[in-house]
Length: 157
Figure 1 (spheres, rainbow, N blue to C red):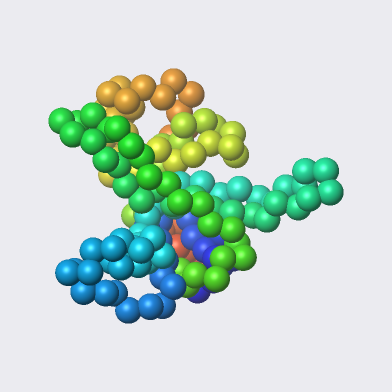
Figure 2 (tube, rainbow, N blue to C red):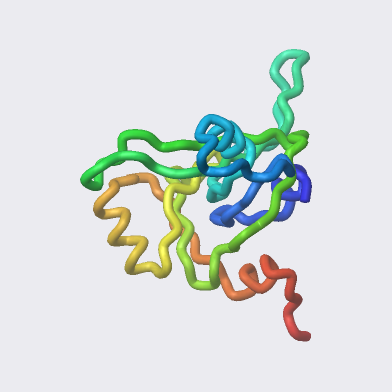
């Protein structure tokens, strides 16, 4: 699926895979493998940003994937994000969608907010927030209807 379809249809919290279509090189070719991984990876959809106009320049819509955290002893030193324009030539697919009952935690309630965590339930979300401290966090539960819509299922009439 295209980057535009991910922007339009993928829910925040979804795990998204992207690929340039090239085959994975053997592990023994470390540099080639690292270069391949820059265009073939997965991440959690944490932010969508609509197109904006600055002066006479139009900045296209985009979305951001959180690819991972690096650190040691429970201290995160580096967080890796990758932002894609809706015009990206890469191929995308949705690997996993947030389950019904899971809690999406955003750092700010406004549209500019970024998804910082997906918890299995409200208790886990509150516990995570108490440890990580986002004072303006917005918590939103994924409803059964949203989860069914995310899977492409319709509600029974």
